Length: 290
Image (cartoon, rainbow, N blue to C red):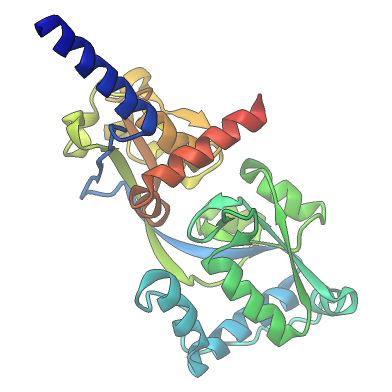
């Protein structure tokens, strides 16, 4: 009888696993202490001051008339934008704005796997907070918005070769980018944080000793880690493993191939609430690569 019951239980367990009823649930933890505080900005070519000023001016107008708050509340539940209250013209006379209006479109470069700033929905359409902002800006400029996915690590090259007109995708303002681009003022705050699994035993940054860390290639997560030598020197190998995007970084953690991820808090919290979506997107990326 015991043998029969054992067989029955085995069959039931197999059926449950096959139907997904016993799918493992992952519980993520964002460490309270951040590696760094950041601000998001929009990047233009160094010479394109007139275009940069026009976009900045329109964002200020959107703040004054309430449209900025409306879009921000839609994506974040409250107005967390940091667009300033006033705009100061620089008096630039370059032809960058004229060229955009003559061709009738603004080409926006982005990493299309960076929710909720810019990412693909279930239909494959690119949506997000930055997309809504840019759509409204282009409407007020009387031009069309064209979205151009790029390899994030090559964003400056894509900009300077003229393939895109701006980089607008939750891009952190830092000294290196300020040197290579003409940056807008900050429109949102962010933090670089460490994400791990609840049962990892990691509850503070010093718990990363001898642990593996993964992050996105070309992201400011790498800068944040490099700026914290006290943390970098204690992680396994003294450096993080780089992958193509944040989806794959989070999936490495989910699959147990990494102990922790460093990434933008805004994106991390989006995926923490959507583990099934994370798994689906990562598997799709891996499938496409094959």
